[in-house]
Length: 194
Image (cartoon, rainbow, N blue to C red; front, side, top):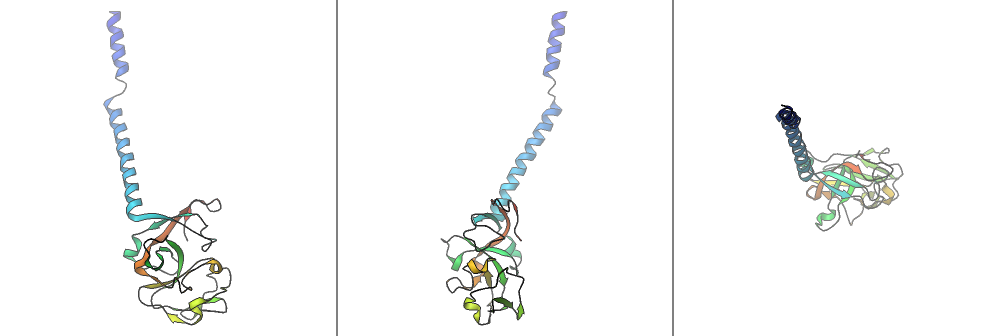
């Protein structure tokens, strides 16, 4: 009799892992797999990453900082003033992506005079911490053509941007995406690009 009781007890111990527990475990595994697949889908369809090269976007973005880009947003809306974008300089597919801030869009009048950017005749004195030392091609007022954007670095005196004839205005077709998340800096850590 004692032997049968031990076998029964052993069977009961084995049965502690019930079908209910297995089902709960499998549902958690399923949820984790779905979350991983969704994360990969979002990263590979909505975003790509690039690295900021140089000090032209300081203090917002630091040299060597990784920035995630939203590639879909500009299929829905047009880049707006203040957006930080990544683009291919002059459409060169082999060039590293450049990261700059949009200061003017199609139809806007641009001029830099006395170290201040004028957008449609209005001074944009709060846009940059320093006065702009070199007006470049914006010394004389001009109107941005359709589908072209005037971009500048936040650190305007250490930036090659639309003021330079080498780079010029950025065509919409050369814009890869909007910077939305940055990471990898001791000073700023992980955060949204503003």
